Image 1: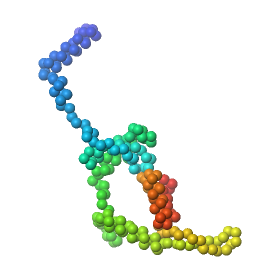
Image 2 (image 1 turned 90 degrees about the vertical axis):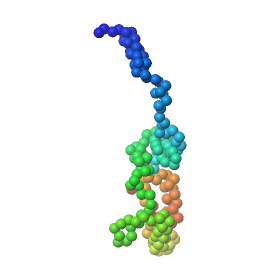
Image 3 (image 1 turned 30 degrees about the vertical axis):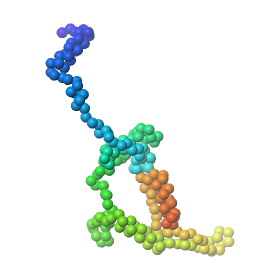
Image 4 (image 1 turned 45 degrees about the vertical axis):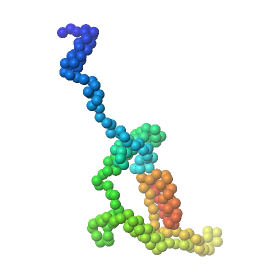
Length: 196
């Protein structure tokens, strides 16, 4: 069969018209059967990814108090809308059944973890920190003067039994707060995972 381009277009148009009218195709019905988008009615909240302290921007879409969608922020200068696999997985991390939502404690000699309240967990950490700080507190240190060779006492005021190791998941602001906290409790052993 030899058909010209013009003839092909005529046949195509006639076929579409016959199909639409002969089979009861109604574009108005098709338009009425639209569906609501997943993001319809959500609140868009800009934020930062917490995984590696790179500071990538995220956009979280929240509906009725639940995170329903997460994506990279295209206007953010660090990632320009892209997210690595860890950042892209934040949505599944938020509602993972394996995510711990309560503090746990394993008693000495026990092989099981038990749930405890946040108040109890904070009290235990505060008491243990105070106990170790008091036991390892050093108010002064004996040093030798390099010029005279004489020994003298130097005020140091430090807790040598406490060390702090920061995480790669904290940003600059949190690292600043950790540094202030370490100075407050008196530990000179303050390090960050990025340097280790």
